[in-house]
Amino acid sequence: MEFHYPQTVKEASTLLKKPSSLAIAGGTSFTTRPRVKHLVDLTRLKLNYIKDDKTKITIGATTPIADLLEFPTLGRLASGILHAAASTLADTPLRNMITVGGDIACRHIWANMPPALMVLDARLRINGVKRRVIPIEKFFESGLRPGEFISEIVIPKKSNKGRGTFIKFSRTRFDYSLVTVAAYSERRGKKARVVRVAISGVTPPTRVRVIEDELKGKVVTEELIDKAALQASLKVRLSKSYIFSDEYRRELLSTLLKRSLRKVLMGR
Image 1 (cartoon, one colour):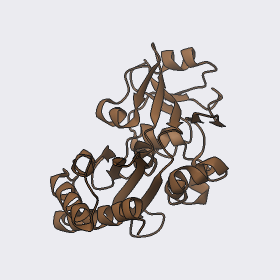
Image 2 (cartoon, rainbow, N blue to C red):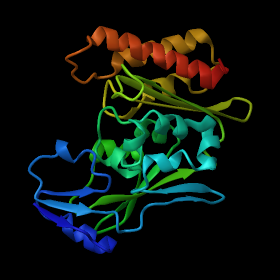
Image 3 (cartoon, one colour):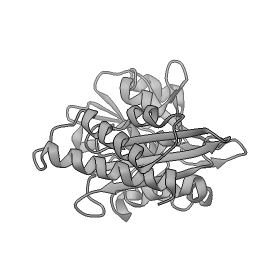
């Protein structure tokens, strides 16, 4: 195994084109990636930062999760949804090692940050032969191409002035998530309402379009919320679990979806 420490984006991209190469920063998930021949350390590319301007918040991919908790603007954004996601991710020592980009790039089924970022309408800046910007949910559909790595996460401010919530259900506070639900709601005009919902734990991080479509343009009631949550829990394709039954996980997912939606839509 060879270790590489690129100094530039171009150098990193070239190294990541090698067969059996892997980008690392915090390195906490390295043991789950066997047969790696080239470890490409991204920590010298100066991607550890959080920038706040009038229209967006930009987070460098190698920024530790712990740094999110120290940034005041993120604590106010959409009811502090990113703070909630960060504070329940692993324990304090690991939060100082796990990076924001790494929690996304590893594509773990239990990941905290992707659902929260999905409902914040976040985009990923991806470097490689060509630079591209994609919605974070698209990343979980297509992944990275050879030579590519995530360089930044961009959160638009104009789309995140509403109410958000993040719920993680696990056996202990810092354990892997069994079910994670993130939800966001914003009123635009008298009738128009934006609703975004994302989940992880029972399935890889994904937007729940069934709920978003069901609630679009309708008067929100508890009955409508219950119906949308139940439909979503039945349609989600569950990952395998050797601990909990599918029936239990669907019931749990439905319950957490209802709680999240009532909070962001009805303030309860």
